[in-house]
Length: 250
View (tube, rainbow, N blue to C red):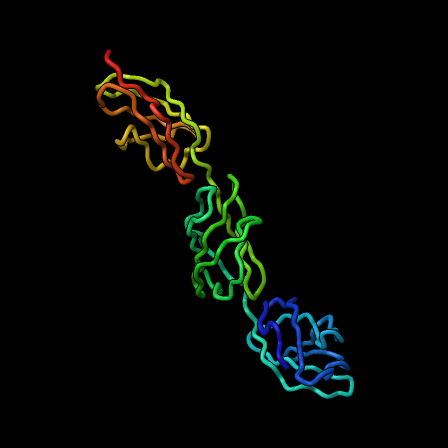
């Protein structure tokens, strides 16, 4: 008497299908017992000749038995109750709008994971163990989305992931200065720069301060005569303004 699935949440409410190798053997079923607890919504389906029911709450491993109208009881088949997963961390908890960021969740009970969603978008499961789940995040829109994990125990979501746009267009004020550098410049981006990890003047990384959600302050380095590209890299990606700052003779 196979069960499908043969495992479910400790809270019950798992839809279980029971079949028999003997045609119509279950047609007179009166109830289904999970251990000593009766299942709900026990229904015999003539086509395709099976029984469906809703598991009661339980724990551990129990024997499932079908009770027929004449009192006959089937042999027991094991059903495994799975506790709800506990997911405690998400690393990283933010990333770019594009898909492909590898995100790791740690916790307990993650080995029966069948699906992960970032908002309404499904992620790709890379690996899973009881204590760790690794996925590839799907593409998303800028903002915070809930992360839900579906296991044999059901679907749960107590984590969040933030999608970050790249900085977008960059404006520099002032946009020129002396060859000796030391010019205080404000870089204004079209989108958030609070997770900035690098600013380049030409190919030179320079120190920076985040002065607002879309603004950075930098001191220009020395450079030869001419214009340089300026790039800002955040968790959302890199934006580059071509010939954005001009080094001039004064």
